[in-house]
Length: 161
Image 1 (spheres, rainbow, N blue to C red):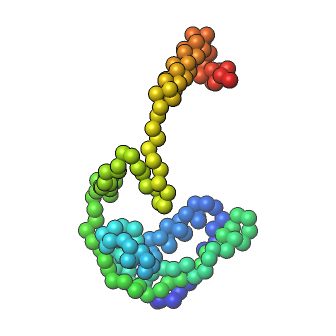
Image 2: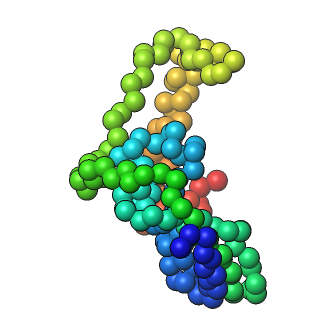
């Protein structure tokens, strides 16, 4: 019969997980999910859609924290709104394959636009590049010196000013 209620008192984490899985396997998608998710994927995310059950399950109210460890959940049995939408299931390889890469257009080298601000590409002066190169060489020399002294990476980091 439709309209029945199921009251579940969960004391352990595994009991809460079983109750959530039951709800997940027996609930229908909301209207936003129906509009946003294609049919084949929708039946993967909402297992009820691929079944012939005549009912769905909903949370009758928000879960209630009875004690520090106990959570009370109330499920309601309702008639299904959507027909059986079982679509041929995708193979595991299809489900786990990487999505197609998005196509991005070329970005001009001199300007990057970020929202309403415009950031121009930095132009390095020769003396700045030379200073940067000296700094890299100095750091590498210091690392080599500390390594030759037999210091671990952690000790090397403590020694660096």
